[in-house]
Image (tube, rainbow, N blue to C red; front, side):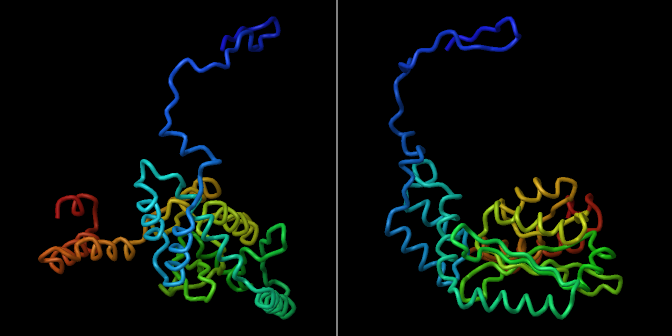
Length: 274
């Protein structure tokens, strides 16, 4: 391709050759959209893992390895997440969605300051729900500078992440700012929630937000809360330490040592030199 700047100071294409000037790489054809197909047995395995409450990332890692390791797998991490989110949405029965909406309507009738918002798809299926109570909105103005956001609760029958937004008041007590039921753990879902968060809490973003280790949440925070600092939850980190050293001799001593480093270090110097 040859470009040339014209008299209006704009670039124009003057020559273009459509023939390839290099050999095609057959191995890369897998990344084309039309070739990204999740095989039937992988779909079934993902559904069974989901029903057995296997952590989402573990299921995805399994599917990618089954598909030919990370370098050769036809489908992407995001595609697998979208598939599971779609399957969860299909399980929501109309009667259950209507019952939830009726409950929210009653709460709004009881308290005019009650806030709730929902997301639906083009077929009018319920996707996401976010609701804080009136008292929570007032608490957030006072204590919403640091919050925790956890999506690890999957106790409902639809396996939809239940996501409480929690802070701490001046007495050191946990206070609930709001709750959400989400159709999936993808960045678009979290962006929707955080934008509704800003609408509900009059545009006040948290100064700091503590989350689980989830790339989708991190991406949504960067887009919606660009000035907020986000940190990973120590409880989740230490839980993974126990899991990773489970087969090593002296695992209890290792876990205790790591816990002491995390919880007993008051300065960066102490943390680095323990």
